[in-house]
Amino acid sequence: MNLINPQAIYTLWLREMLRFLRMKSRVIGALGMPFFFLAFLSVGFRNTSFSTTSIDYTSFLTPGIIGMTLLFSSTFTGISVLWDKEFGFLKEIMVTPVSRISILLGRIAGGATTAIMEALIILFAAVVIGFNLRGIYGDSSVKGMVSGVILAFILMVLIATTFISLGVSFASLMEDMEGYSLVMNFVIFPLFFLSGALFPIDNLPSSVRFLAFLDPLTYGVDGLRGCLIGESELSIFIDLLALIVSSLIMLAFGSYLFKHTEVD
Image 1 (tube, one colour):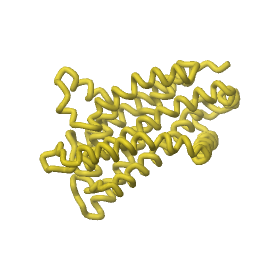
Image 2 (image 1 turned 120 degrees about the vertical axis):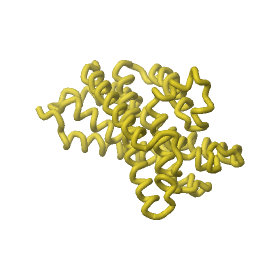
Image 3 (image 1 turned 30 degrees about the horizontal axis):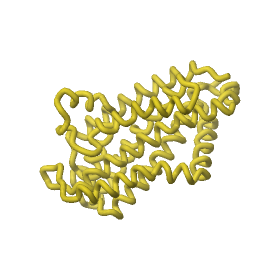
């Protein structure tokens, strides 16, 4: 049995794409909260500046809401795993001559694609609302903006991989969707609020600030700001490196738990 089966990965990816396109309510539900956060907070804090260069709050907020979209959509993949476990589909693919790592990679590929599609929709909506795309390091030239969007896309892939692996890890340990949703709420919201998505992490008390630097989403949001508006607390290289490390750690952790998950 091959460790990595590209055909199996593609099949599971395609299944997730078809489910995403057919479940219109899921798409609307996934985009509803990020869109309202973006629309209402950008209006309510439109005269607020969190930057030495006076970048408007819409521009400051947009990368954070993109990170929020990736976080929530990625962890939703865990519910999909539990759903398949409950209705027997997971058992059916587990007994096929396909390695569990291929099954996991197919899940991650499908979940990451849908999460990034939703994030790009939010980015487009932000541009309509008034988001000023400045490109990497504030370079507003076409080359700078294209480079920034490409690097932002790479960061989105790493963010999605990290949190899909986290969601699958929890789903591998649990049996019911209600319990999963309850537990993940206690995980997702602290990760979101500690990431600096809504306000600079410098505003956090020093006793709490160190927790923000343990949060992978902090580096994702900071890196997206560097790529899309040219403003970041850390260098983009550090953000990228931190996300690569966190995605590899979570992928290894998720793979281990998924390999040992029990299906009835």
